[in-house]
View 1 (spheres, helix red, strand yellow):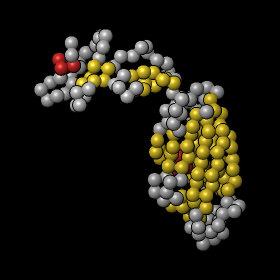
View 2: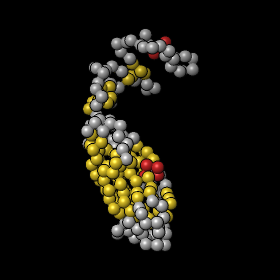
View 3: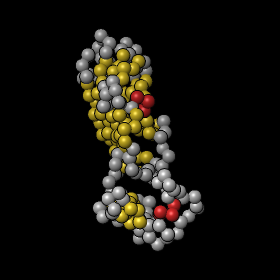
Length: 194
């Protein structure tokens, strides 16, 4: 049986069946070449499908650990009273291809380009990494921050994490004198499984 049996007059593939059993599945391309969908086995949870460039597929180890990246897509002026949650300001730019299991380690990279826009002296603030609401790392920033220019905080840490854990990054301060805080476009944080 060929796929032509499943194609209607508009060229749409119609498969209304619970399963199709076949020894070989060939898909014809526009250039008259074929993709041969035959796999040697089911593969494992840590493998991904790869092509050999000739239309054949195979399972390979997923050693290309692509990180998840969250990015500030445009300059964001926020009212920094006591807390700023970076998870609200930074949106997913890329989703990683890894699975978190129990007793995993991740590499968390943070690059924050910021400016206090008040006419006052910049103040210190903490950058806190939480796992399930528990502080696992705190860095104090602002001691060398200059007023009315962009400053940069960059940090890399390893965090222990389990499946289902919730990771969050927040900025906190106590001093209420300066509140106008600008996070520059392309500030980001990324999560990579180690």
